[in-house]
Length: 221
Image (cartoon, rainbow, N blue to C red; front, side):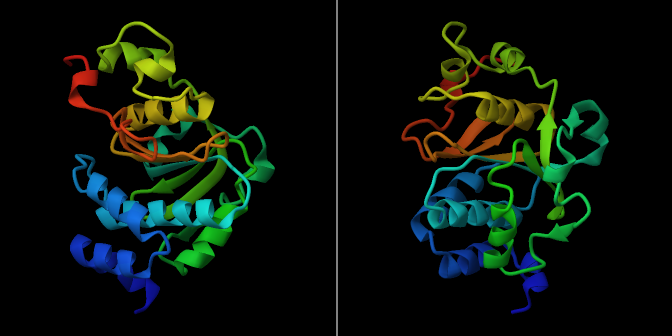
């Protein structure tokens, strides 16, 4: 099937295709289950494609690495949140492509070029990769914890629902998923290799057992 036509499959048929061709079937199946409950208005098959690419990187790379991907990026937020501290890391800024333009393996190789970069990869809601190596500023994770989560004591990691201590990448990612409306944020931890997906300021998928956000963790809003 031509790659560009994959985006037009129904979510059900896309999931079947993705699982049949995936190298990480079990994990991708679990992710599909988590994403099927999403309330964020982004195409399921696109989110699953991003997840599959990052799972490929985790499988292929022999060393731990960090990754931060914003899916559903809207350029209207650029002035408020984005800075590019090192223009040489924005390798996708002048080389735009869609996550369905090439095979999953080739997209994985393109993303692999960014694993030593600081900052995030931005992908819009139609799957077009806009930038890499960008820093998201002004996110204020402490305010998110106060506004959305019931727990009022402890460090930010525990207050935001993480079972392990996390640092700037993950605190920024979970907060970005709240501040940047209608986005899904994907991270890979450089320290542990853990994989997370965040939506609406919540952990919707995690490789850390029992970490997915539960209703009881949230304050009434």
